[in-house]
Length: 121
Image (cartoon, rainbow, N blue to C red; front, top):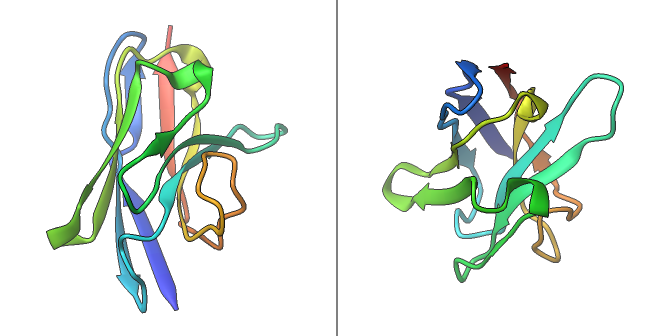
C-alpha cells in the first residue's frame, strides 16, 4: 500500500510562486518515478512534470522554465516549485507515483488526494 499526501497549495496572484509538497509512505521505493498532475473540473487531467530514478525530468511546454520538481529522500517528500504562476495554472494538483515508463503523461499507479492551487489575475 502506498499513500501520497499533498499539502502546500493555496491562492496567489499572477506572477507569484507556490511550492506544494507530497509525503510518500508505505511499501514504496521512493526513487520510483514520481510526478504531478493537475485537473480543472470538466477538463481532462494534465501531466505537469515527472522525475525518474536517475533524476531526469519530463514536462510539457506550458510549464517549461516555470515549474521544477525535486525530492528530499530523507523525508520521503516530493516538491513542486511553481514560479511565474498564471491564472491558467489554477487547478487541483495531484502527486503521483510509480509508472512503467516515466514521463509526465505516463499512467501512474498511485495518486494523492490533491491540493488546490488558485492563481488570480
